[in-house]
Image (cartoon, rainbow, N blue to C red; front, side, top):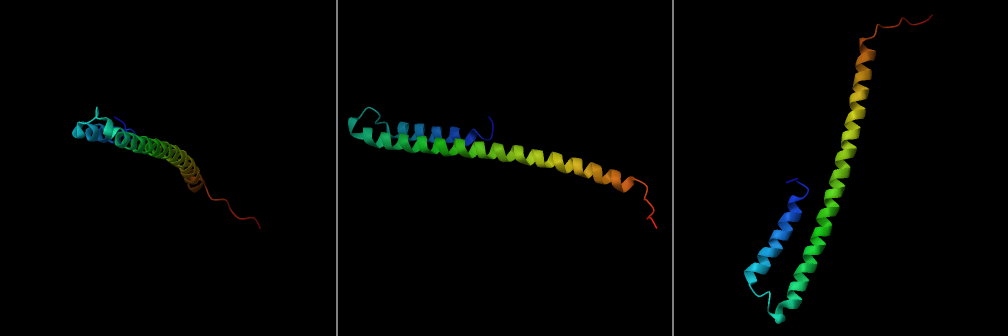
Length: 89
């Protein structure tokens, strides 16, 4: 399981556990409370998905930055290893 999906699974599992623990899914008097819980779980799902997308985007940006740094480091090493030029004049 990927790390970005783990909070989503945990949120769903928590919701199922709450409903199972109450054991009152068939009672009409609790319909509103279950709707509230489901709404909160949906909001949590949306936040987790948004956070996962943001984390993935940040990870890709960091990888690209690391690649650019690697290219720059390679060029710096080439310049440092090159023979020194004598100044004109």
